[in-house]
Image (tube, rainbow, N blue to C red; front, top):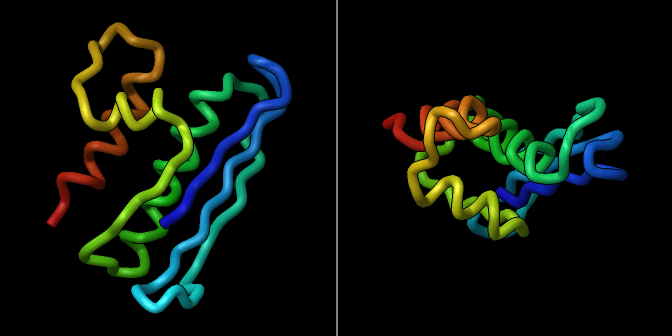
Length: 100
């Protein structure tokens, strides 16, 4: 799964998209979102969340997730505090990651 999010301004109009491919590189699904106004890190996180959701809906049991934001990778690999403004969306991503 490759995901990306972008914001024109910070905050600004934002979108996110992603593509799901199998181990042979063949397209299996994807998504594109018009998020509205938000920051770039939030747009990236929406991309990750919908990417995980799309993979779950396609019954993917093993997934490699690629995202180009080191900040978002940090959020997903370390614990962020509940008071962080992006913690709710990070927790939703953790929920998908923790599923069997």
